[in-house]
Amino acid sequence: MTQALFERLKAELPRRVKLELGPEALNQLEAPLKLVLVPGQDTFTAPDGRAISSEALAQEPPPEPKPKPPYTRLAGYTLHIWGKDYATVEGILSDCVAALRRICGSALELFPSGWDEDETGQAAALPADKRRYQLRFRVFLEVGAAEPGVYVRLERALLDQTEVLP
Image (cartoon, rainbow, N blue to C red):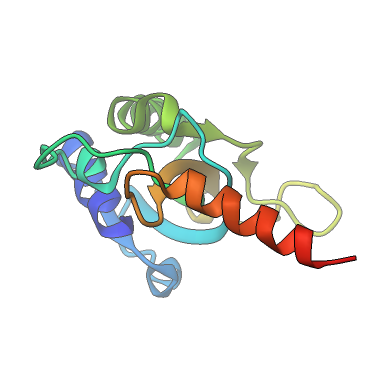
């Protein structure tokens, strides 16, 4: 899923943008405009109508219609954006948000984001060319066994357990 998101984002953004994947790329600031996609914390919830399948994210048509799986993965990410100045970063930020919306549709949820901050919440005292914007978001994904009747079986199992308990 993360690799598919990375590949789609890379294809959607202008070619002048250097996009890398993973936290190991955070310490390598050799480009005047660079983006690094870093996976973050995930949560799992009951099915959510906004969730998309991994096939849809990768733009692969599903082989056949299938029932919704029993869980939704809320996959967290931070997209780190560096540029030579504020205008450059803010320009590509708009492109990034638009690209994520095209890729994920309603399965995208943006979180409070901003420029690097220190522990007091103030902008970090970094040189202008080393400042970065951190765009935080999550994607709702379908996960779990997608089988007909899975909800009924899960519900029955839960009911059976509660009947045994005093």
